Image (tube, rainbow, N blue to C red; front, side, top):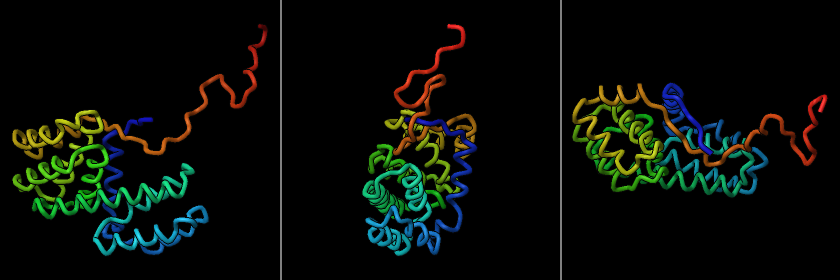
Length: 216
């Protein structure tokens, strides 16, 4: 199941992600979240994972948001844990790629880079993109924008060319080119745990037939 997200919504999400929680501070919010009785069988593992984020300087909020999403959608605890472990691996890889490339890291950069890996972009291409951003000497905000554009292009089905397209935009128009692209686009995000499809109009749940219209 796919859903459409407007640019303004994406920017709002990034603004929320850029809150202090990104500094690796889960605090009491994370503790109370893990006290949910539905997570009892994986609580110890989740606690250990969230604790490690602070030590590694990784953002906690995306992981807590993923837990909440899983709970709302009634995902099995084991699957929630597996999803967070996979996220953790991607975040660690992207952080290492940033260090190697020398690119400046914005508040949402690691999450966006991890999103590229999750969307199927290879580590080689992410590394190539970050190296290109470093050579352009982009500031932190512009790095976030470049990664967002690459992720949105990938989500729209242009993953094979996204890195080259972003670097081409920067080469021709600089950061203004990124702003212009973002102003015109919409993003498609994959729903890993889709919600149940709504009941079609005129249909009722269960096995009974819909009542016949009056007069027929």
